[in-house]
Length: 263
Image (cartoon, rainbow, N blue to C red):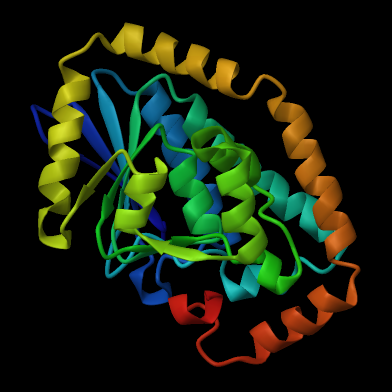
């Protein structure tokens, strides 16, 4: 069963919703979901008439991060390279879509789930949502583009504070930091997302696609180097005693894919 679906809704089908559809696992990202994400992104790229893509999670939250079953494989360097490569391909593919993308975040976006939201062009976040990159508490680093994308949004000082402390923030704080473009009460998140989509639809799809490509290139001119540095750092991290101990504790804990397990 596919864990990602595309809903064509809003404004005569010009807005596509890319929906993480694994609510029973809090939309935790495993290899199958990432494969489905790649397939859905390719379908969107080939589709006609789409002016905006909204990325959201079904159920009570956006995504609780990487699935425990997938995390269990990452202590082996070869598996880390393989699985991380699939995540990077999906997230970079989403970012390269010639269509503006909006992450509509409710509930939580944690770890790899937050990195997915960062791979979108814009973010509309519920005021009471929880966002963060808790990787350093696990003895690792955000390694699917989160370090570079967060830094380009908030600058190195704020990015260091959030990543080096594993600090969690709410939607209101995300707005103040410039991570969220729009913040809304949970009950009005759908309307706020639709309003931003309408603003995008009022502009030229061709111009928007070209403009976002130029902006991304200007913001991160050495993107491939950043991705390589993330991988090198992660390969070092998974050999440390801190990671090995945190990794064992995490996998042994009940509810490993709950948001509280990531704080």
